[in-house]
Length: 172
Length: 223
Image (cartoon, each protein chain N blue to C red):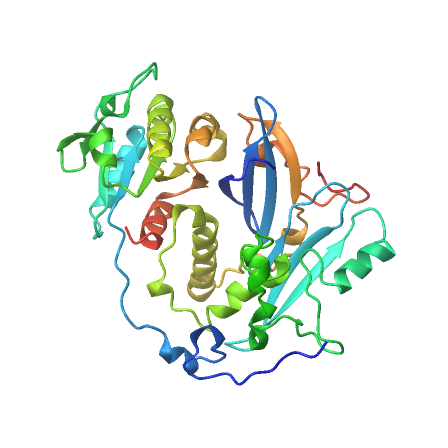
């Protein structure tokens, strides 16, 4: 077969074949993500989320569970009480209003019922979810199994830097 | 495979990552397709049935170009004549090439032979024929050097995020401490992809420890 060879124009972005031709790319900074919510699901995760929240971020908001959820029952997203890392009270329903991604952070003994409610609430609102389970593999198995059905993506067994790298990549 | 919205799980491995994509299977089970990535540039597609196992690796030529190698093999038998011919014909992960060259017949100069009518008929979403060129067209059309500061990934890109993180850390460890990067040790390459059905509470890395390692004389784990 003979390929139909056409001249490559320098300003034809999709056909750029060299770094020099790449100068025609649109040179504007992207707008950051406006609705990232990061929620720690246990005491270890709460400490991690609190430390990370001190770094400079765009519009990301950081929370821990204000109280254990414990049992799913027929509870709705307004029943998951949250506490911002600045101490301000909130709840899941309010925080999902303008959220576009929810990141659940867990170590061991994560509140699986909270993960269930968060995951279900995000699913019906078409909000992306991610879970990061931090710690040694032998210690976090139960937490991973608890989060698995409720996070579209799970990153398993990493460390605190994984949270930072994920948030950075998401332009949080 | 009727479940079109897979969930992903990303695990560290000695040589890189295991990325598991899971879909709902029978009650209380998930169907997992597990892809190993070995640093810096080797991947293997999860198998299906007794089909050969496929994979790719990307070898830099210079700062702006690379060779992409695509392979098929079967762990316990030679490939059949039909399987070899399918590779040459550009099926599966392979490209049909311009005779006498390693350049795909569908390439950037001919808009990857995009077929708008096939798009309208709903035969392909992209209009580009075949997995290999669908992937290649997206990768190449980013240009030779993509400006990562202007991209915005989503949480489903966690495998990409983790891979970049591991590459960066390996470079820094080599530069600062002289630590040999993962992927140099041949043992890191003795991994396999797998396609399995597991109980919903099972960790695929734990449950598939043997399936994800090379076992001489044992076929790939596939359903």
